[in-house]
Image: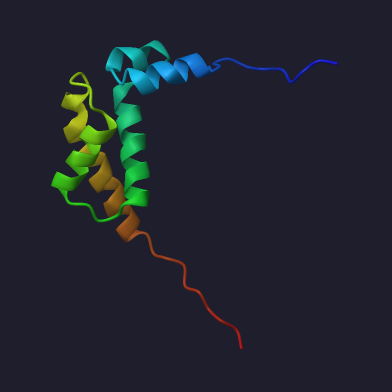
Length: 101
């Protein structure tokens, strides 16, 4: 009996430990994550969880998520991505819920 076939890239528990403990650009780059994509995805996630943050609050969140000094230059990109996500979310019409009698 054989297990499921696995494909590359595999993220191991050890890799996740490195990223959790060493939130630095070089640690992320070593497993194939680039700063811009990581920051944009993180900002989009935060925007869905915490809509309507001010730029100052979004910046505070960034430094909570990415405390490494090496990540600091990406704070402006995080704020811009957060604001872009929020603008798109506000422009997207919501679904109307109609109750049938």
